[in-house]
Image 1 (cartoon, rainbow, N blue to C red):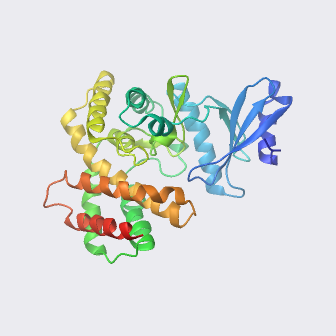
Image 2: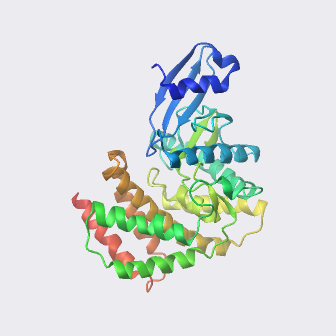
Image 3: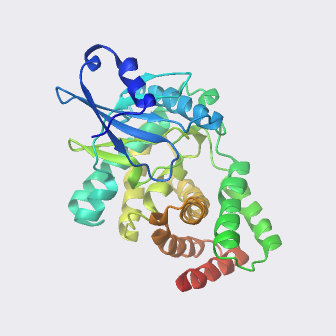
Length: 344
């Protein structure tokens, strides 16, 4: 336990009431975020978590406000998110329910991805995901979003395929790739992927390290980048997640369970969904690779480097599902990355 800095001490004032007594503070380490986190532990054992944006960071302040507004919206919709407790507009300090320390990723590490324990939580996750996506779009206000109000073609080109090219191919691996040909294929991929209905709630980083397990239930965190988008993107994020490395048969089964849950809520063509899923999974895979390259090399977070190779294998597998005549340059670039990363 440590003494809090002034930001986290302010969380006690925000909470007030029973929190005004003796409270201990324990810092929590984030994954790739620049935000700071702290667990508050009251004398009677009650707990909460406070998150503060980086000091003097206008974008961080907008992100914090989005986390508060979107979190309250999702909680009101019945999504399994932490209870939002308090927020300070001026500083961006946000306080919410403490969901403990066990992530879905920890369950996978302890029991194995194909274990009965992991399978039960993944099944619960895809059912709750479908509900959050459909119910969460009702009365969702795009003005809450701190980044972009919708996942669209521009996001795909700048934050996903462009991220892959800049952070992995150029900066980390320094590859000589045909950038003009890649740009044409990225535009084609974005055109195709953008045809999916993008009117649903999109978490945008829905993977096993952002899913907590508490008292036998899954709970979702890190939704502050939420916006409107297509259904298949978040499911793809979950199923191709390099942290978990789910077996293909398990991915296929969970996709079917998800579609069963989705069609209880609204009719959606299974065939159309599968087409959209493959394209959006490729987009997500490109984003993952860009993020892992950037975080490991530019942010000094070596933890992420170990997942670049499995993410590249995933990208190659997804590209193999697309027509052979399409995306030849991207296939070549992915193979170049594979060869290069094996030498690092």
